[in-house]
Image (cartoon, rainbow, N blue to C red):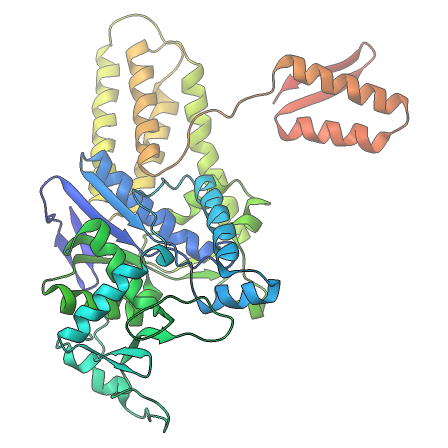
Length: 463
Protein backbone atom coordinates (compact mmCIF):
# COMPACT_ATOMS: atom_id res chain seq x y z
CA UNK A 1 0.00 0.00 0.00
CA UNK A 2 1.40 3.38 -1.01
CA UNK A 3 0.56 6.71 0.64
CA UNK A 4 1.55 10.18 -0.49
CA UNK A 5 3.47 11.63 2.45
CA UNK A 6 3.30 15.43 2.67
CA UNK A 7 6.50 15.30 4.73
CA UNK A 8 8.59 13.79 1.91
CA UNK A 9 6.42 14.94 -1.05
CA UNK A 10 6.36 11.42 -2.48
CA UNK A 11 4.45 8.15 -2.34
CA UNK A 12 5.84 5.71 0.19
CA UNK A 13 5.11 2.12 1.10
CA UNK A 14 3.01 1.97 4.25
CA UNK A 15 4.87 0.24 7.07
CA UNK A 16 3.14 0.66 10.45
CA UNK A 17 5.00 1.47 13.65
CA UNK A 18 3.54 -1.72 15.14
CA UNK A 19 2.65 -4.66 12.90
CA UNK A 20 -1.06 -5.11 12.32
CA UNK A 21 -2.00 -1.82 13.96
CA UNK A 22 -2.65 1.69 12.66
CA UNK A 23 -2.45 4.71 14.96
CA UNK A 24 -4.21 7.59 13.24
CA UNK A 25 -4.90 11.17 14.37
CA UNK A 26 -7.21 13.46 12.39
CA UNK A 27 -7.70 17.10 13.36
CA UNK A 28 -11.37 17.70 14.12
CA UNK A 29 -13.56 20.82 13.98
CA UNK A 30 -13.69 23.88 16.21
CA UNK A 31 -17.22 23.62 17.59
CA UNK A 32 -18.68 27.13 17.47
CA UNK A 33 -21.35 26.44 14.82
CA UNK A 34 -22.69 23.67 12.57
CA UNK A 35 -19.94 21.95 10.58
CA UNK A 36 -19.66 23.14 6.98
CA UNK A 37 -19.04 21.05 3.88
CA UNK A 38 -15.37 21.99 3.98
CA UNK A 39 -15.19 20.26 7.40
CA UNK A 40 -17.04 17.30 5.91
CA UNK A 41 -14.37 16.51 3.31
CA UNK A 42 -11.60 15.39 5.71
CA UNK A 43 -14.19 13.63 7.88
CA UNK A 44 -15.39 11.56 4.91
CA UNK A 45 -11.96 11.06 3.32
CA UNK A 46 -10.14 9.86 6.41
CA UNK A 47 -13.10 7.81 7.61
CA UNK A 48 -12.77 6.00 4.27
CA UNK A 49 -9.01 5.55 4.83
CA UNK A 50 -9.79 4.06 8.23
CA UNK A 51 -12.45 1.77 6.75
CA UNK A 52 -9.99 0.46 4.14
CA UNK A 53 -7.36 -0.33 6.76
CA UNK A 54 -10.00 -2.22 8.76
CA UNK A 55 -11.12 -4.03 5.58
CA UNK A 56 -7.50 -5.18 5.19
CA UNK A 57 -7.47 -6.52 8.73
CA UNK A 58 -5.64 -3.75 10.61
CA UNK A 59 -6.59 -2.83 14.16
CA UNK A 60 -7.15 0.93 13.81
CA UNK A 61 -6.96 3.35 16.74
CA UNK A 62 -8.61 6.45 15.25
CA UNK A 63 -8.49 9.67 17.26
CA UNK A 64 -10.20 12.89 16.18
CA UNK A 65 -10.48 15.84 18.54
CA UNK A 66 -13.00 18.59 19.18
CA UNK A 67 -11.48 22.03 19.76
CA UNK A 68 -13.90 23.28 22.41
CA UNK A 69 -12.12 26.43 23.59
CA UNK A 70 -11.31 29.08 21.00
CA UNK A 71 -11.82 32.79 20.26
CA UNK A 72 -14.84 32.07 18.03
CA UNK A 73 -16.49 29.92 20.71
CA UNK A 74 -15.86 32.59 23.33
CA UNK A 75 -17.24 35.33 21.05
CA UNK A 76 -20.45 33.39 20.41
CA UNK A 77 -20.82 32.59 24.12
CA UNK A 78 -20.48 36.27 25.04
CA UNK A 79 -23.04 37.22 22.37
CA UNK A 80 -25.53 34.75 23.84
CA UNK A 81 -24.61 35.52 27.44
CA UNK A 82 -23.75 31.91 28.26
CA UNK A 83 -20.68 29.94 29.31
CA UNK A 84 -18.36 28.86 26.47
CA UNK A 85 -19.00 25.23 27.38
CA UNK A 86 -22.70 25.68 26.52
CA UNK A 87 -21.75 26.63 22.96
CA UNK A 88 -19.15 23.89 22.50
CA UNK A 89 -21.35 21.13 23.93
CA UNK A 90 -24.27 22.22 21.77
CA UNK A 91 -22.26 22.03 18.58
CA UNK A 92 -20.43 18.83 19.51
CA UNK A 93 -23.88 17.19 19.67
CA UNK A 94 -24.83 18.71 16.31
CA UNK A 95 -21.49 17.75 14.72
CA UNK A 96 -22.01 14.15 15.80
CA UNK A 97 -25.51 14.17 14.26
CA UNK A 98 -24.09 15.38 10.94
CA UNK A 99 -21.21 12.89 11.07
CA UNK A 100 -23.69 10.09 11.69
CA UNK A 101 -25.81 11.27 8.75
CA UNK A 102 -22.66 11.22 6.59
CA UNK A 103 -22.02 7.65 7.84
CA UNK A 104 -18.73 8.69 9.43
CA UNK A 105 -17.82 6.08 12.03
CA UNK A 106 -17.44 7.12 15.65
CA UNK A 107 -13.77 7.72 16.46
CA UNK A 108 -12.04 5.36 18.86
CA UNK A 109 -11.60 8.48 20.99
CA UNK A 110 -13.07 11.97 20.55
CA UNK A 111 -11.01 14.01 23.05
CA UNK A 112 -11.95 17.59 23.94
CA UNK A 113 -9.30 20.25 24.48
CA UNK A 114 -10.80 21.45 27.78
CA UNK A 115 -10.47 17.96 29.28
CA UNK A 116 -6.75 17.72 28.48
CA UNK A 117 -5.44 20.94 30.07
CA UNK A 118 -3.26 19.15 32.64
CA UNK A 119 -1.45 17.28 29.87
CA UNK A 120 -0.89 20.52 27.97
CA UNK A 121 0.60 22.22 31.02
CA UNK A 122 2.87 19.21 31.54
CA UNK A 123 4.14 19.29 27.94
CA UNK A 124 4.70 23.05 28.10
CA UNK A 125 6.74 22.59 31.29
CA UNK A 126 8.84 19.94 29.51
CA UNK A 127 9.46 22.33 26.59
CA UNK A 128 10.54 25.08 28.99
CA UNK A 129 12.91 22.70 30.81
CA UNK A 130 14.47 21.67 27.49
CA UNK A 131 14.93 25.29 26.42
CA UNK A 132 12.35 25.16 23.60
CA UNK A 133 9.91 27.52 25.34
CA UNK A 134 9.98 30.57 27.60
CA UNK A 135 7.49 32.48 29.75
CA UNK A 136 6.95 36.24 29.65
CA UNK A 137 4.36 37.88 31.92
CA UNK A 138 1.92 34.99 31.86
CA UNK A 139 2.42 34.06 28.19
CA UNK A 140 4.50 31.06 27.16
CA UNK A 141 6.13 31.10 23.70
CA UNK A 142 7.80 28.35 21.68
CA UNK A 143 11.32 29.14 20.39
CA UNK A 144 10.82 28.26 16.75
CA UNK A 145 14.48 28.67 15.73
CA UNK A 146 15.55 26.30 18.51
CA UNK A 147 13.89 23.41 16.65
CA UNK A 148 16.24 22.55 13.78
CA UNK A 149 13.64 20.82 11.64
CA UNK A 150 11.15 23.70 11.60
CA UNK A 151 9.61 24.02 8.14
CA UNK A 152 10.22 20.41 7.06
CA UNK A 153 6.51 19.66 6.55
CA UNK A 154 5.51 22.87 4.77
CA UNK A 155 8.91 23.28 3.06
CA UNK A 156 8.97 26.88 4.27
CA UNK A 157 12.24 28.59 5.14
CA UNK A 158 12.10 30.33 8.50
CA UNK A 159 14.21 33.26 7.26
CA UNK A 160 11.82 33.79 4.33
CA UNK A 161 8.87 33.70 6.72
CA UNK A 162 10.37 36.40 8.95
CA UNK A 163 11.43 38.67 6.10
CA UNK A 164 9.68 42.01 6.45
CA UNK A 165 8.11 41.19 9.83
CA UNK A 166 8.72 43.75 12.52
CA UNK A 167 8.28 43.08 16.21
CA UNK A 168 6.03 45.64 17.88
CA UNK A 169 7.51 47.57 20.80
CA UNK A 170 5.22 45.81 23.27
CA UNK A 171 5.67 42.36 21.72
CA UNK A 172 7.26 40.03 24.24
CA UNK A 173 8.44 37.47 21.70
CA UNK A 174 12.17 36.89 21.36
CA UNK A 175 11.61 36.23 17.65
CA UNK A 176 8.66 37.14 15.38
CA UNK A 177 8.22 33.46 14.41
CA UNK A 178 7.79 32.27 18.01
CA UNK A 179 4.25 31.05 18.68
CA UNK A 180 2.04 30.89 21.76
CA UNK A 181 1.75 27.79 23.93
CA UNK A 182 -0.14 29.46 26.79
CA UNK A 183 -1.95 32.79 26.94
CA UNK A 184 -3.02 34.79 30.03
CA UNK A 185 -6.66 35.20 30.99
CA UNK A 186 -8.74 38.03 29.52
CA UNK A 187 -12.00 39.36 30.91
CA UNK A 188 -14.97 37.24 29.85
CA UNK A 189 -12.88 34.22 28.87
CA UNK A 190 -12.69 30.75 30.42
CA UNK A 191 -9.37 30.07 32.15
CA UNK A 192 -7.40 27.45 34.04
CA UNK A 193 -4.70 27.64 36.71
CA UNK A 194 -1.12 27.11 35.55
CA UNK A 195 2.44 27.79 36.77
CA UNK A 196 2.29 30.98 34.66
CA UNK A 197 -1.00 32.24 36.05
CA UNK A 198 -4.64 31.93 35.04
CA UNK A 199 -5.03 31.43 31.31
CA UNK A 200 -5.72 28.97 28.51
CA UNK A 201 -3.65 26.99 25.98
CA UNK A 202 -2.75 28.03 22.47
CA UNK A 203 -4.38 26.09 19.64
CA UNK A 204 -1.40 24.01 18.46
CA UNK A 205 -0.49 22.37 21.75
CA UNK A 206 -3.78 20.49 22.15
CA UNK A 207 -3.23 18.07 19.26
CA UNK A 208 0.35 17.28 20.32
CA UNK A 209 -0.89 16.36 23.79
CA UNK A 210 -3.99 14.40 22.76
CA UNK A 211 -2.13 12.44 20.09
CA UNK A 212 0.53 11.43 22.62
CA UNK A 213 -2.01 10.47 25.29
CA UNK A 214 -4.28 8.34 23.12
CA UNK A 215 -1.87 7.02 20.47
CA UNK A 216 1.65 7.21 21.89
CA UNK A 217 4.72 9.32 21.18
CA UNK A 218 5.15 8.05 17.60
CA UNK A 219 2.09 7.50 15.42
CA UNK A 220 1.50 6.14 11.93
CA UNK A 221 -0.71 8.76 10.29
CA UNK A 222 -1.55 12.36 11.06
CA UNK A 223 -4.18 13.81 8.74
CA UNK A 224 -6.29 16.87 8.05
CA UNK A 225 -7.08 19.54 5.52
CA UNK A 226 -4.39 21.11 3.35
CA UNK A 227 -4.95 24.42 5.16
CA UNK A 228 -3.54 22.88 8.36
CA UNK A 229 -0.07 22.12 6.97
CA UNK A 230 1.18 25.53 8.06
CA UNK A 231 1.28 26.65 10.77
CA UNK A 232 -0.79 24.10 12.72
CA UNK A 233 0.83 20.81 11.72
CA UNK A 234 4.27 22.38 11.41
CA UNK A 235 3.96 23.62 14.98
CA UNK A 236 2.67 20.25 16.19
CA UNK A 237 5.83 18.60 14.85
CA UNK A 238 8.03 21.19 16.56
CA UNK A 239 6.25 20.72 19.91
CA UNK A 240 5.95 16.93 19.85
CA UNK A 241 9.42 16.08 18.61
CA UNK A 242 11.11 18.58 20.94
CA UNK A 243 9.16 17.30 23.96
CA UNK A 244 9.30 13.57 23.19
CA UNK A 245 12.71 13.34 21.55
CA UNK A 246 11.52 11.10 18.71
CA UNK A 247 9.73 11.39 15.33
CA UNK A 248 6.06 12.39 15.68
CA UNK A 249 4.16 10.90 12.70
CA UNK A 250 5.53 8.65 9.94
CA UNK A 251 2.98 9.72 7.30
CA UNK A 252 1.22 13.05 6.86
CA UNK A 253 -1.95 12.99 4.72
CA UNK A 254 -3.77 16.14 3.62
CA UNK A 255 -6.93 16.56 1.56
CA UNK A 256 -7.30 19.32 -1.05
CA UNK A 257 -9.49 22.40 -0.82
CA UNK A 258 -13.21 22.49 -1.55
CA UNK A 259 -14.52 25.26 -3.81
CA UNK A 260 -18.12 26.28 -4.51
CA UNK A 261 -18.85 26.79 -8.22
CA UNK A 262 -15.09 27.23 -8.76
CA UNK A 263 -14.86 29.94 -6.07
CA UNK A 264 -13.40 29.58 -2.58
CA UNK A 265 -16.13 29.08 0.02
CA UNK A 266 -16.69 32.29 2.00
CA UNK A 267 -19.49 33.70 4.14
CA UNK A 268 -18.93 37.14 2.64
CA UNK A 269 -19.56 35.77 -0.86
CA UNK A 270 -22.72 34.01 0.24
CA UNK A 271 -21.47 30.61 -0.98
CA UNK A 272 -20.94 29.15 2.50
CA UNK A 273 -22.91 25.97 3.21
CA UNK A 274 -23.22 23.89 6.33
CA UNK A 275 -23.78 20.15 6.12
CA UNK A 276 -27.18 20.74 7.72
CA UNK A 277 -28.16 23.12 4.92
CA UNK A 278 -27.04 20.65 2.26
CA UNK A 279 -29.10 17.92 3.94
CA UNK A 280 -32.25 19.95 3.20
CA UNK A 281 -31.62 19.55 -0.54
CA UNK A 282 -29.77 16.25 -0.83
CA UNK A 283 -29.48 12.91 0.91
CA UNK A 284 -26.11 13.15 2.66
CA UNK A 285 -25.13 9.82 1.14
CA UNK A 286 -25.03 11.78 -2.14
CA UNK A 287 -22.65 14.30 -0.55
CA UNK A 288 -20.41 11.47 0.67
CA UNK A 289 -20.44 9.84 -2.77
CA UNK A 290 -19.62 13.21 -4.35
CA UNK A 291 -16.67 13.73 -1.98
CA UNK A 292 -15.24 10.34 -2.97
CA UNK A 293 -15.67 10.98 -6.71
CA UNK A 294 -12.31 12.76 -6.85
CA UNK A 295 -8.89 11.88 -5.42
CA UNK A 296 -8.65 13.25 -1.89
CA UNK A 297 -5.56 15.37 -2.64
CA UNK A 298 -7.19 17.09 -5.63
CA UNK A 299 -9.14 20.34 -5.30
CA UNK A 300 -12.85 19.56 -5.40
CA UNK A 301 -15.52 21.80 -6.87
CA UNK A 302 -19.01 21.68 -5.38
CA UNK A 303 -21.91 22.56 -7.67
CA UNK A 304 -25.54 21.59 -8.20
CA UNK A 305 -24.67 19.91 -11.51
CA UNK A 306 -21.95 17.77 -9.95
CA UNK A 307 -24.22 16.82 -7.05
CA UNK A 308 -26.91 15.81 -9.56
CA UNK A 309 -24.37 13.66 -11.40
CA UNK A 310 -23.33 12.08 -8.09
CA UNK A 311 -26.96 11.35 -7.24
CA UNK A 312 -27.43 9.64 -10.61
CA UNK A 313 -24.28 7.59 -10.10
CA UNK A 314 -25.27 6.54 -6.60
CA UNK A 315 -28.78 5.66 -7.81
CA UNK A 316 -27.27 3.35 -10.45
CA UNK A 317 -25.49 1.41 -7.73
CA UNK A 318 -28.46 1.30 -5.35
CA UNK A 319 -30.84 0.25 -8.14
CA UNK A 320 -28.55 -2.66 -8.98
CA UNK A 321 -28.36 -3.66 -5.31
CA UNK A 322 -32.16 -3.51 -4.96
CA UNK A 323 -32.62 -5.61 -8.09
CA UNK A 324 -30.20 -8.28 -6.83
CA UNK A 325 -31.77 -8.18 -3.37
CA UNK A 326 -35.16 -9.09 -4.86
CA UNK A 327 -33.79 -12.06 -6.81
CA UNK A 328 -34.06 -15.53 -5.34
CA UNK A 329 -31.84 -17.23 -7.92
CA UNK A 330 -32.01 -20.88 -8.92
CA UNK A 331 -31.00 -23.59 -6.48
CA UNK A 332 -28.49 -25.31 -8.75
CA UNK A 333 -24.71 -25.51 -9.32
CA UNK A 334 -22.85 -22.73 -11.14
CA UNK A 335 -22.58 -23.04 -14.91
CA UNK A 336 -19.24 -22.51 -16.67
CA UNK A 337 -20.50 -19.12 -17.88
CA UNK A 338 -21.37 -18.12 -14.31
CA UNK A 339 -17.97 -19.26 -13.07
CA UNK A 340 -16.43 -16.98 -15.72
CA UNK A 341 -18.55 -14.09 -14.38
CA UNK A 342 -17.22 -14.72 -10.86
CA UNK A 343 -13.66 -14.61 -12.21
CA UNK A 344 -14.47 -11.12 -13.56
CA UNK A 345 -15.93 -10.20 -10.16
CA UNK A 346 -12.64 -11.17 -8.48
CA UNK A 347 -10.72 -9.11 -11.05
CA UNK A 348 -12.85 -6.05 -10.26
CA UNK A 349 -12.34 -6.53 -6.52
CA UNK A 350 -8.60 -6.52 -7.21
CA UNK A 351 -8.99 -3.36 -9.33
CA UNK A 352 -10.84 -1.74 -6.41
CA UNK A 353 -8.13 -2.75 -3.94
CA UNK A 354 -5.31 -1.68 -6.27
CA UNK A 355 -6.96 1.75 -6.57
CA UNK A 356 -7.32 2.13 -2.82
CA UNK A 357 -3.75 0.98 -2.24
CA UNK A 358 -2.49 3.61 -4.67
CA UNK A 359 -2.81 6.48 -2.18
CA UNK A 360 -6.53 5.85 -1.62
CA UNK A 361 -7.68 6.66 -5.13
CA UNK A 362 -11.41 6.52 -4.40
CA UNK A 363 -12.30 7.88 -7.85
CA UNK A 364 -10.87 4.76 -9.52
CA UNK A 365 -12.32 2.57 -6.75
CA UNK A 366 -15.79 3.94 -7.56
CA UNK A 367 -15.15 3.16 -11.24
CA UNK A 368 -14.48 -0.47 -10.29
CA UNK A 369 -17.84 -0.60 -8.49
CA UNK A 370 -19.59 0.83 -11.56
CA UNK A 371 -17.99 -1.90 -13.68
CA UNK A 372 -19.21 -4.47 -11.18
CA UNK A 373 -22.74 -3.04 -11.41
CA UNK A 374 -22.61 -3.18 -15.21
CA UNK A 375 -21.40 -6.78 -15.05
CA UNK A 376 -24.31 -7.64 -12.73
CA UNK A 377 -26.90 -5.89 -14.88
CA UNK A 378 -25.80 -7.82 -17.98
CA UNK A 379 -25.08 -11.24 -16.50
CA UNK A 380 -27.22 -11.75 -13.38
CA UNK A 381 -30.96 -12.46 -13.75
CA UNK A 382 -33.67 -14.34 -11.94
CA UNK A 383 -32.57 -17.44 -13.86
CA UNK A 384 -29.02 -17.23 -12.51
CA UNK A 385 -27.83 -19.60 -9.83
CA UNK A 386 -28.43 -18.59 -6.23
CA UNK A 387 -24.67 -18.65 -5.61
CA UNK A 388 -23.99 -16.16 -8.42
CA UNK A 389 -26.73 -13.77 -7.23
CA UNK A 390 -25.58 -13.91 -3.60
CA UNK A 391 -21.86 -13.54 -4.42
CA UNK A 392 -22.28 -10.56 -6.74
CA UNK A 393 -24.66 -8.83 -4.31
CA UNK A 394 -22.39 -9.41 -1.31
CA UNK A 395 -19.37 -8.13 -3.25
CA UNK A 396 -21.04 -4.85 -4.28
CA UNK A 397 -22.26 -4.30 -0.74
CA UNK A 398 -18.84 -5.07 0.74
CA UNK A 399 -16.99 -2.61 -1.51
CA UNK A 400 -19.62 0.08 -0.97
CA UNK A 401 -19.23 -0.41 2.79
CA UNK A 402 -15.49 0.25 2.49
CA UNK A 403 -16.42 3.65 1.00
CA UNK A 404 -19.07 4.19 3.67
CA UNK A 405 -21.89 4.02 1.13
CA UNK A 406 -25.06 2.60 2.68
CA UNK A 407 -26.77 0.04 0.44
CA UNK A 408 -29.44 -1.22 2.85
CA UNK A 409 -33.07 -0.49 1.98
CA UNK A 410 -34.76 2.36 3.76
CA UNK A 411 -37.73 1.12 5.74
CA UNK A 412 -40.73 1.35 3.43
CA UNK A 413 -44.22 2.48 4.35
CA UNK A 414 -46.46 -0.41 5.27
CA UNK A 415 -49.57 -0.90 3.16
CA UNK A 416 -51.77 -0.02 6.15
CA UNK A 417 -49.95 3.30 6.56
CA UNK A 418 -50.53 4.09 2.89
CA UNK A 419 -54.24 3.27 3.09
CA UNK A 420 -54.59 5.48 6.17
CA UNK A 421 -53.02 8.44 4.34
CA UNK A 422 -55.24 7.84 1.31
CA UNK A 423 -58.31 7.93 3.59
CA UNK A 424 -57.07 11.18 5.11
CA UNK A 425 -56.59 12.60 1.62
CA UNK A 426 -60.12 11.57 0.66
CA UNK A 427 -61.52 13.29 3.78
CA UNK A 428 -59.50 16.42 2.99
CA UNK A 429 -60.83 16.56 -0.57
CA UNK A 430 -64.38 16.08 0.70
CA UNK A 431 -63.86 19.01 3.09
CA UNK A 432 -62.42 21.02 0.16
CA UNK A 433 -59.04 21.17 1.95
CA UNK A 434 -57.20 20.73 -1.32
CA UNK A 435 -53.91 22.01 0.09
CA UNK A 436 -53.78 19.09 2.56
CA UNK A 437 -54.88 16.64 -0.11
CA UNK A 438 -52.05 17.77 -2.40
CA UNK A 439 -49.59 17.65 0.51
CA UNK A 440 -50.47 13.98 1.16
CA UNK A 441 -50.13 13.13 -2.56
CA UNK A 442 -46.68 14.78 -2.62
CA UNK A 443 -45.66 13.04 0.61
CA UNK A 444 -46.50 9.65 -0.83
CA UNK A 445 -44.89 10.45 -4.18
CA UNK A 446 -41.66 11.37 -2.41
CA UNK A 447 -41.65 7.86 -0.94
CA UNK A 448 -42.30 6.17 -4.26
CA UNK A 449 -46.08 5.75 -3.88
CA UNK A 450 -48.09 6.87 -6.93
CA UNK A 451 -51.81 7.67 -6.61
CA UNK A 452 -54.34 7.42 -9.43
CA UNK A 453 -57.90 8.70 -9.06
CA UNK A 454 -60.36 6.34 -10.86
CA UNK A 455 -64.14 5.87 -10.99
CA UNK A 456 -63.71 3.01 -8.54
CA UNK A 457 -61.74 5.20 -6.14
CA UNK A 458 -58.07 5.87 -5.53
CA UNK A 459 -55.57 3.23 -6.69
CA UNK A 460 -51.94 3.26 -5.56
CA UNK A 461 -48.78 1.61 -6.78
CA UNK A 462 -45.08 1.66 -5.99
CA UNK A 463 -42.94 3.55 -8.48
